[in-house]
Length: 252
Image 1: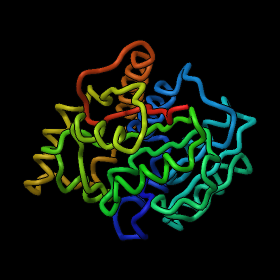
Image 2: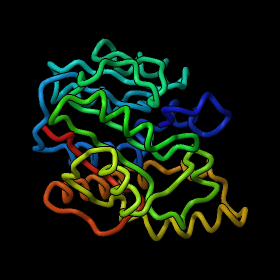
Image 3: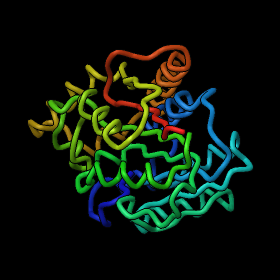
Image 4: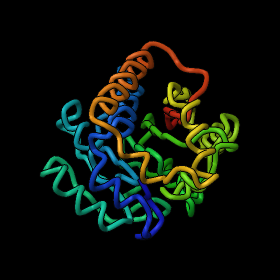
């Protein structure tokens, strides 16, 4: 979700209200759990920037029950939903991930899922803040949109301002001081359908919001497909897809 851009009349509000159980949201959270699976995370607080409704942060409570969990988002509506979903399992804080309100070397894990590719994001500044606030050997998990040629109205409706190539995002991370431990694409099964749908959106044949009117049976099927992909990602990386996941570590 949007860690930097102020409240705007786009589809983010729709997401906060309706999509905790949508196949894409469930599948992408499953993928993030898979990427974190069996990776050594130091003891310490966990921060999610652009936390949205805090659903992923609340799910981390099952595995990291003793860690302090904090969600940062500038969107007030997102934080209101986050308070109810976290339910005392973490703390949502209004803030800007270009200027994180945390001490240097104070966090063990920073997570940014669809935050570092938002319209007004200064990627270098955001990565610098993440690096600064992580302890040595701390981890950064990010998800950004892949393939710049896919950028269009769909992305802008959700505040996405940029899609990255592998070389672009990896170069920015290494320049910020991170060591990249894992790179993979994800949401591969939906790459071809997404291309078709986005052509339809750009031609005015499909409404962006109508994409979320998914029948229950189809929603269940697509959720299972993405969960299978997440299980595969515990074993290997995928060569292409709609999203990029990177796990990077601050050197000791």
